[in-house]
Length: 183
Image 1 (cartoon, one colour):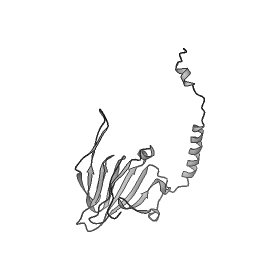
Image 2: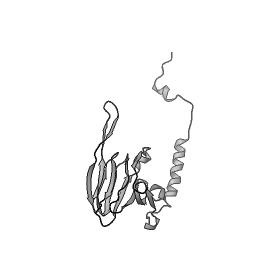
Image 3: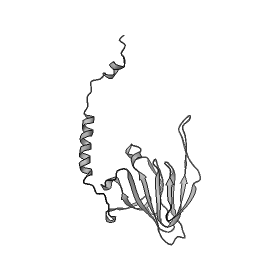
Image 4: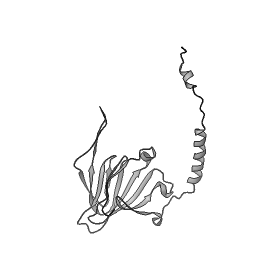
């Protein structure tokens, strides 16, 4: 029986590839394309979407062909008494309240992996009230939902920002638990 050392294992196999060369070429092509993309997206170029979370206006999204590749941002519109859909995702999210006042409900995740993977969401949500100028943080995996106050006299507008990096790493995990009314 022949005993192989590490040096011998390193040279085992006969497959070949040009993966690195392809990556270098793709990078050069991307850089040429990237230089053609705009630094400014005008309000008219930002598309509206009636989504499962309600009416939103995309500010920056990788499919909008802007130079931004790491962040997605949209403005969410909530009429008086209206609520967004309820969802959870693997990435954290930050929101800035541009107009209005309301509240968020957050169902936090309790996660344990000492003996086995255990995932459990809080049975009751935490309530966080917000108003114009406030900043809201939603941790990864937290089930969340936004509400404009029922007695509000104007719509609430929230700028919702999330980092695409988790999605780009292959963890595009998103669950829509409940749709916004009318969807």
